[in-house]
Length: 302
Ligand code: FPP
Ligand code: MG
Image 1 (cartoon, protein in one colour):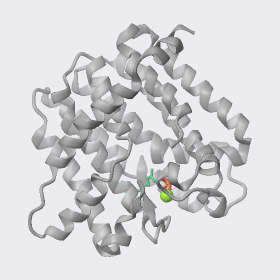
Image 2 (tube, helix red, strand yellow):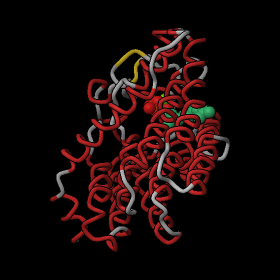
Image 3 (cartoon, protein in one colour):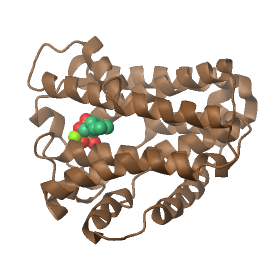
Image 4 (cartoon, helix red, strand yellow):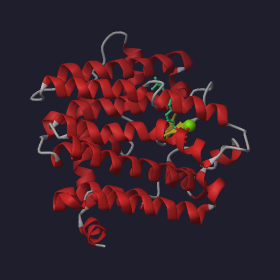
């Protein structure tokens, strides 16, 4: 398939490295330490702990694809990472998944205590919205408002929070269906990935048809991302993942491999990615970064 060949020829490693470096600098500058230093240190500890920065990069990529500039999308790109980071800090808390490691480092509450970790998450979530509203330049106000509304919906009960609740309710149950599992993931991880993709296009002033096409791309890679995450939880090591491996089995979590087996899960992830790549064919070479990212999602090792 032509799209697939294109995406493999594209130098994704360099592209990701360049965009990631840009995001790292912007994130570092976004949050200086002021009084009370402890909370800023806790927020910075998790925000600057590395990670793939996939959400910001997707946002920058779709803004560019839609004719916008990096500068237009950078504040939103940072906000997406702030929101993602806060969700991970809270997800790792003893009341949730009770995890000790994240991104190769001790989790936030292990270093700063539970009280500060909860507040660090709250601080990052609120700051994400402030940051988008105050730092975005060169974007039509109605487009900016639309992005902020989408961000709100994405973190709330219609998105991350709703997905997490169903995830917690499903733990230990043996009769979870593929439909419930997909609901969990489209909300818990898919919603923020979709918003990352769509926000970049909205900021650049993209029309409804393009936004729809990019949503389809995002929904497909979002689900594929999660299927691969479930597979890696079984097949990868803690060193590769930067977080505890084998957790799903231990927590008796329903996962795609537990429902379908590893081979079928791989096949399903690949089919989703193939469709995501195909839906962008209409953009020609301009879509190469997004197509290559889709391809990377099924081949990644961490
Ligand atoms: C990781 O999933 C967790 C998430 C992707 C998001 C969890 C969402 C919340 C804690 C709600 C956050 C609250 C607000 C207000 C947005 P996982 O546990 O399956 O993966 P892991 O192995 O990386 O921990
Ligand atoms: Mg977790």
